[in-house]
Each structure stands twice: as structure tokens, then as C-alpha cells.
Amino acid sequence: MNAEIIAVGSELLLGQITNTNARFISGQLSELGINVYYHTVVGDNVDRLIKAIEVAETRADLIIFSGGLGPTKDDLTKETIAQHLGTVLEIDNFAMQSIEEFFMLQNRIMTDNNRKQALVLKDCEVLINRHGMAPGMLLEKNNRIYMLLPGPPKELEPMFQFEAKPKLAARVNDGAQIMSHVLRFYGIGEAELEVKVQDLLDNQTNPTIAPLASDGEVTLRITAKAYSLDQAEQLIAGTKDEIIRRVGQFMYGVNDDSLSSKTAEILIENDLTIAAAESLTAGLFQSELAENPGISQSLIGGVVTYTEQAKREQLGIPADLLENYGVVSSQCAVAMASKVKEKFGTDIGIGLTGAAGPEGHDNQPAGTVWIAVVIGDNEPRTYQLHLTGQRNTNRLRAVKRTFAFIIQLLTEQGYRKI
Image (cartoon, rainbow, N blue to C red; front, side, top):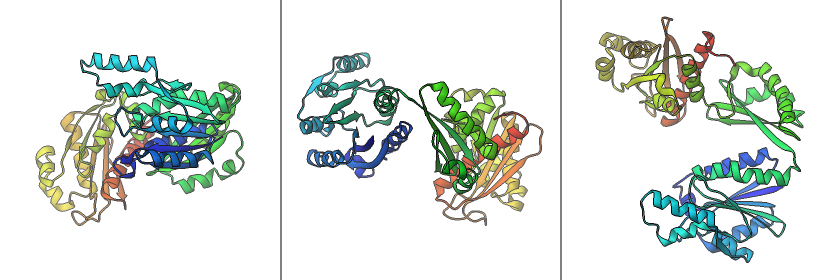
């Protein structure tokens, strides 16, 4: 089966939002063995959308639309598809009831245009929206599948995962089960990783292996097809074990893990507390860590000491240390980590300082970063980065490297097992 994804919305063409839906859907379809050959973006215009549909029909068996299912006049996806396919729209009673209940619970008046969101294509399979109002749709017509999904990712992603994906799987896999397992690596480049598993990539059949690189991280997605989940798991296990044998030292997690979530997991499971003093990252490290549920038992606090004065006054770093070594130095990073650990009484102290760019700072070139980690009574450990990206990219990479450094050090001390 070949698919095309059509994202509808002028805001996408204007660059006001990023089309993350297409990336998500493509990843999900690849797990089902469905080929995606084209991504199309079209504005809120009936004629242009019809032309896009006509082109897609010449080259795809499955056409997936995202966006344009809302209550306003420029939400025209389902109306346009109904017109193109020569069918009509009808009210889905379950969706209508859900919309009415939402406004009732919010103690708000429901305007008439909200009823539009409960309209679906006649004879379609309705995809329930458990995180919004407009339902999705799946309609088979003229030997082709048309799928309509809402635009907001928080609605589209769970709808696809739990409503649409099982229906597609039943159509394309003849009862076979598709299972994927993602291995996540940090500290090794995509090219180097590929070299180390090249023979596995060259000889892959079932399971398949797909590499993907993203901002300093590399993933390998292993996908198996079998007639039971147990068989699929067995197929994946052998390949996974061989990959870990070769490059396991760079592997930090699996599936939906992130460097942040893995760090939080280790801290929480081992009852470790942490505090951070941040300069160039200005709280980004703490913000990323705070996204993880349960982290409040480990993340005690922190400070942003962006200026030299703040480092002296908030952390008590001696003026002569800053004068002798500068704020972009290993000595400053260690002082920040040690002082914040002492200030908040935590097991671990983090110090982040550097020159994010685009200009250098304190006689150090842009992209120079020093990370310091102090764990318990152990000697401080430091890590230096020489980054070449844009300012905010450098800040994010510094935070990612800090998480990876923490995982490494805690692993060395026996706090973690892969």
C-alpha cells in the first residue's frame, strides 16, 4: 500500500506552525509497512485542495488528510472531500453529544458553528476524538482509502495511534502483527553507528532496521512482522541483543525514552536529589528535567546566574576565582556545581557555563561550554564542549550533553544497569 499525506492549512504555508503531523504519521505508517512517497501541504482553498486530491489519487492507495475539521469557515477539508467524492455529510450523534457535554461542563454557550465539528462523511468509519471535539473519519471508496484527522497534534496523535492504526493494520497485514522497538544512542554519530551494524542493515529481511539521526542523537528502529506478538518479540530480541553487543556502550534508552527522562528515572529510582546552577542555559536544564512526572522528589531547586555579579552574590563564588580563570572555565563550572549543591543540600550539583554565541564571551570563542557535575563526596567531573551551531541549538545541545554526562557518571558508580 502506498500513501500520501495532505496537510491542510494556510498557517503551514505561511510558516506560522511546523508540520509535525506528517512526520508522526509517516513514522507510524512505516511500522505497518505502508510506503509514504509524498507529503503535500495545501492552503485553505477548495479549488487547490481538490487539485491536490486529484493528484494524490493518481499515485496513492491511502490518502491521509490532517487539519481543516474545525468549526470555522476556513475549515473546509471534509466539505471539500464530500464534494469531490459525490457524497454528503451527516451528524455523528456520539460526537455531537460529546461536544454538547463539553460546553455544558465548561458552563459556556455553544455557538451553532460548533455543530459543524460533529459532521462526518456518510458511511465512513468514525474515529473517536478523545482529546478534542472533531472526530476523524476513514472511508473506502473507488478502491482507495481516505482518512481525515484533526490538525492539533494532541488530538491527531492519540487518534491515529488508538483509532486509525489498528484499522489500517487489519487491512494491510492479513492478520499479522507489526511490532517495533527503538534503541536510542548518544555519543556516537550516525555514520559511525551505521558502519558498526552495516552487515545487519545489508542483510535485513524480517526484522528490518531503520537508522535515524536527530540533533546529536541516533536511533535504530527494529520492526518485526509475525502472526503473534510473542513471535515478533522473539524476532526483535535477537537483533536487539546483537546491536547492543556491538554498540551498547552508547545506548541510553529505548522507545520513548529521552536523555531527560532517563536521567529523571535514575534519580527517582535511586532517591537522589539534584540542584543546578545555570549560566548560558538560563534554566533550560531544569525546565527539561521538570517535564518528567515525579521529578519533584529529586529536583530540589536551582539558580540562574547569568552574570558574573549573580555568580558572586547568589552562589558566593569568590571574585578572585572569576578574575583569574574567567566565567567560561572549568573552575567556574566546578564552583557553580559545588556551591549550588551546598546551597540546596542535594546529592548532586550541576554547573553549566559557556558562550552560547553568536559572539564569544570572556575571551572564549562562541560555542565553548563547560559542564561540571559533583556527586556526593566524589571529586568534581567536568566536560568541555566546542559547539558550532546557532545560539539556541548550542544551549539545547549543552543540556543534552549534561544529561548524558550525568547518566554516564551515575552508571560508573553503579546506579544504573542497561
